[in-house]
Image (cartoon, rainbow, N blue to C red; front, side, top):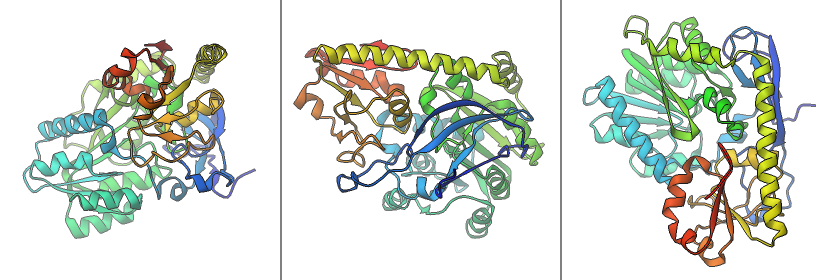
Length: 414
């Protein structure tokens, strides 16, 4: 039965085919960022299915249950500027885009899903005009106060026309880890095409399905991430919409991502990188349902390893906390049944999260100083993609006997 806050999609978001086959089912969860305040603990928090489907027509992998985007994104607790490693990544990424595309001073750069404006600051500091578009009012207010003009809107072709009429065509349109959040991919790409100058480039970064599969990082599957992208289906999708995906490259951020470059046909030379990546995607079987059954088996083995370790530690009377509550933590905690019986509390660097409780399971979120005040024996790094940075920064914790448990991509105690 469908809930009023979500709907079941029966067509592919890229090619509109109805030939969708469900290939992976994870435990239902609340929205991954739906942290609650103490006074909300008694309220019922809805959970929604997490079913992954493969399109037999174009090979695109996607969630088939779509939660109302206004429910997911209108108020947000993630801020790009809260994670030092992400700030460094976005700064280096912005510089690379500038060096490669060579925009002129005064050219317009528009970022869709601009969050607190961290990425756009690199372009502003280079002398470019910048504009952010983001539906989260609370985060957009932060960006505007910091000098990054940000519109509180969901991006589509209509908003693109309004932006172009007011600000002119964009030399660069960016979408970083939001291109997978879009239920209306057609409307999004129509908007990007309309907004781009004739020689403009759409640059996006998304989690890469190759990395999700090879590293078993299943926790990156959650309701905000409707689409699990790879080069082959994307290249064909852009071509069908009058655009050219002319290059792509892999990056390490967020456990493994894909950065794509798109222009109008004829504006750029297509790179051989695309064929190399597509061939590898086919080689490892990402267009075959059986591949995802093997993926499910690996997920289950990872869960058994982690829960066996934690149960043994609890039996010894050890105190266990966790570090970081990124969106993916909700999937991992639900699928592996990690509630407050196992994890007493989570510490997080993001001020917006401290004092709240985790989605659904309601594990308290405390400041990082709590590690040094309560001295847990073990800390599960839920923000495992930043494990090296976290462990290095908290050497004082390990020097006093504390240990970190990194659950993914492979279980490690450090």
